[in-house]
Length: 162
Image 1 (cartoon, helix red, strand yellow):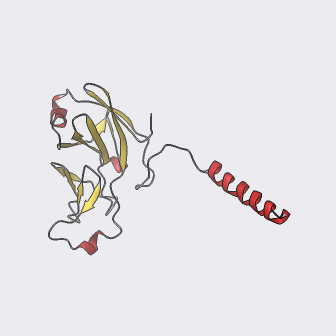
Image 2 (cartoon, one colour):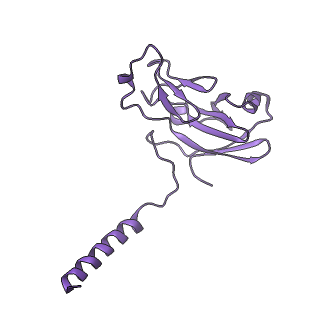
Image 3 (tube, one colour):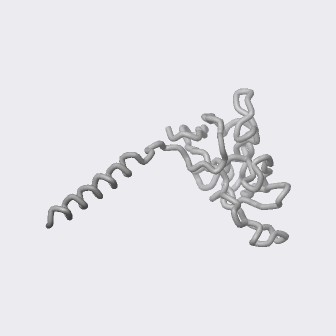
């Protein structure tokens, strides 16, 4: 190898190494919504209000925790049981307009203003029959939260990996 080739090779190696090392290793979720308040809540599945979460495909909006509204702008967090022992949690804020809270219907979340539906297994927006596909362009999936079962009847939902 010629000396300038070695210099070029090592320069590129240093640049790529610097990029890889400088990449943020933070375990935060991909942020769809700006300024999401720090969230770390416990959901007891045995409470009568949460019995619906014992059925696969059922969702519930949790509006508050320990007396404080949760989720972006206090819209709440949607929890759904996706499989036998798996759950997903999403912010109950429309990605069509961050000022709008979503409603739930089974495994769907709905934006009451735009009529866009979000499939709660994946958080992706879908069109209703009255909406053209063009209306979905630029609409992000829902903001996801980490959700894991920490005991037989308890979930931990957070926007930071634990």
